[in-house]
Length: 497
Ligand code: HEM
Image (cartoon, rainbow, N blue to C red; front, side):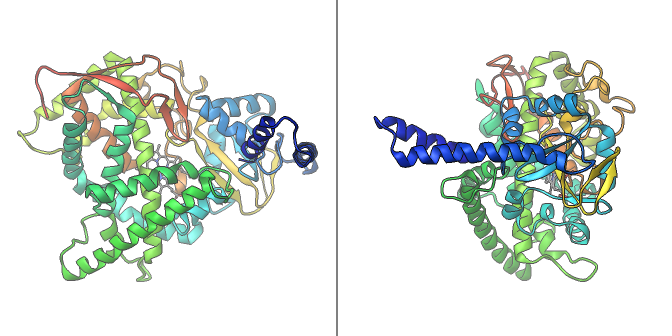
């Protein structure tokens, strides 16, 4: 943003015939200071004894712009590959204002996942912390364990199995409204709408069109500001996200108040959605979540839960169009399941367990285009890893981009091949789309549910062809085809919906 502002001042000055003196002084000072700090910061890595090699980049912003830039160009691995070639599988950089050590190997993943609360704790950039306040993502140690236990009462398979039929009927409605009977659709925006509506319904029974629409508008602004340098000035993505988060909290606050009344009067059920679960559940100390904690955690789950699944479904549709033999195999599996059901009978949890090939296809999509790129940790004490010192307080980052497309772990890594997940599957800690250890994604079963139910219903109805074969996929912040994946729908002769 600092650059953007400097460039816009520069453009304004260029419109004048002669640059004003103040501007010249400002620009010279800016460049001079930036260069001075750049030199200092590049030396700083050498000032610490025994830390992994690397550079800190620019003052404040470090190497964040290059890190984000590689993602937006569709090549998130470039940032890591260029550094691991120079420095090895563990290197130092500076991201979002912090010195950060990046771990780039299955051993590094295992180390970070298994040392949570012993040597490291979860630690997102302050932009994320400020936006999500008291939610799971910003808490560590016993507080995180407590929150996770409470959230898992809803997200664990035993609870989710009760919601499969509801997800199936919502999916059928969504397809009938937006896909079936259309010649051409753009997949990504529709899938975002699908996963967002599903999450709103299952988390807080928000299904009225006006409420959903209002929440959606705020959410689109919010999502863009989460992984940004936290410059809180009017007009920055981060500042807009803060305002959007407040509006979302307000909307959730009213729903919480209404629900409390409904639960007391017996007009709402304690099992109807996540919100009811949270209002009705107490931990072992007999405490339940405060209203603020509920708002923050629902905001987090809506954020973590809808863009990730819609991104995965979109790339999945792309791969199935590009690999007709995989599509045919998924269709065969899903028609087998459909054939075993009575007319009008909805899917059940046991049906999902039979979708083995379809899930391998989804895993292969998650290998090639993982929805989340990695996550941050912080050292709670100084320790040695692989002969290097990691100072107390420093950040660490693990990333899917260091293993998912490496030929050491995946033969022909660029080829879409779901069969690699047969049998024992990939070596441990190489395929990590949901992370691992105590901070592993708590929504993985929920994501599997949405993805498989959608796949079941779409393949039963149609095939599809890409309007733009070879459409590039960028990562901003999730993988997304640049044009949102327009596809031509080709209905089957018989309709199975
Ligand atoms: C394809 C879909 C998804 C992918 C690839 C994914 C991936 C991830 C990853 C990599 C993490 C970070 C783990 C770490 O810090 O080491 C994470 C965290 C998280 N995810 Fe997911 N996720 C998905 C869907 C969901 C869904 C559907 C939900 C909610 C229902 C969800 C909720 C969360 C939450 C709350 C966290 C923070 C956990 C913590 O800090 O302890 N995710 N996810």
